[in-house]
Image (cartoon, rainbow, N blue to C red; front, side, top):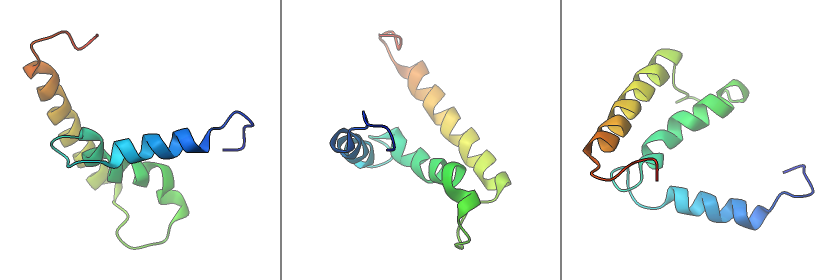
Length: 79
């Protein structure tokens, strides 16, 4: 946000799209909580921040689900 080329409207649009739907239709939703803890946990004293062990388990589960979706595709995931 400190850059003069930062586009807040584009950032807001991207966040809105990433937050839509449920964890089945939008895998980002399943990862968002872990992502927030990875980025912000060191700044927060709020309760509910995941432990490193919990973050690791959630990342492993998310990665397994992501890999299963890739394996289930019939088209090339590199498109």
